[in-house]
Every structure is written in structure tokens, then in C-alpha cells.
Image (tube, rainbow, N blue to C red; front, side, top):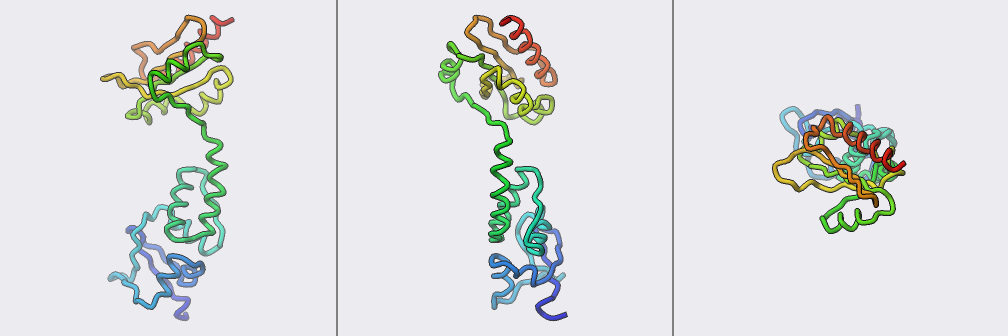
Length: 216
């Protein structure tokens, strides 16, 4: 094996990867600069070069350097993580692939309309042209609440009937999510005080059905 084909061991954030020098120096950037520098690389007692980065997506990074192409995961969050790593390693081709994928993924995400003040809320619910549904959420139990309630599915189902808004709940001592439905008619539907997280969506759907019945 020639010197140019030597196996290189990388310790990326505590995980060992083996590859070849030609793979690492194929593209201009982080690794080409590192391995073609006149300075001697520092290796640990196991012959590994330490890279102080998260190893989560490094196998994908290596595959891109080997094949000059890669299939990205479907998750937007993971694509953004890979994009961050690609920028760090100065892999312009991978950066381009990630950026081309991100807009399409972002377009599929539901857009949240946020109410940031009580004054804004009053302006929205006063004589609305379309019924307004406001979900009062809490960030501290977002993960638990959305386990029972798919916001994206809900928006797709009801966006043609309601202007849907989100407002962070401000009441002290109450950790529950709540909702309110507002229309030009005086009837306002809101969350029962006893509603628990696992019953939130059921209660909301029930109120929506009663709202539709009254409007007939």
C-alpha cells in the first residue's frame, strides 16, 4: 500500500472511523488542508487523529466524500444538523445538497400564527370575518401535550373553517393547554377547567362540533 493510500483513523467525538487519505483529501476544505499541511498531525496512542465534532452524521459525511453524492434523511432537523457539519468541514457540494433539500421540507411544515399580546388578541377576535380558534399553549409541556395532539394534522383539517392562532398561556400555576373559539355571534367556546392533556384534543373537537351545530 502506498503512502497516499494509507488507512487513516479518526476519533470523531469519541467514535472511531477508518477511511483512506485519498477520500479525505478529495475535496478542498477542512480535511485536505489538515492532511496536506506540512505540519505533522498529532495522533493519540492508538494512532487516531482527534476531531472535536459530533460523530452522529460523520458516516454520512464520509460517504459523501467517497461517492460525491449522498441520500439525505427525511427529517428536516437532521438535514439542518448535516448542513451545519458540512459547513464546518467546508464541503461545498454537500452544503448545496442540504440547502436544496431544506426549502422543500420547510414548505411542508405548518405555519404557526402567533399572538404576542392581549391587545393583538382583542383585535383579532373583535368582529372577525372568519371564526377564530386560539390555542393557548405552554412550552414546558409541549412534548407531552403534542403526544396526544398533532398540531399539523389539526391545522390541515380545520384551516378552511377557522383562522387558527397560537398564544402562550400566561396564567400562573396552571400547566394545562387551553383553547377558545370566537365568532361574530356571542357564543364563545373554551376549554373546560378540568380538561387534562390526554383529553385536550377530544374536548377541542367536541367544542368545534357544537360550534358548527349552532351555526347551522
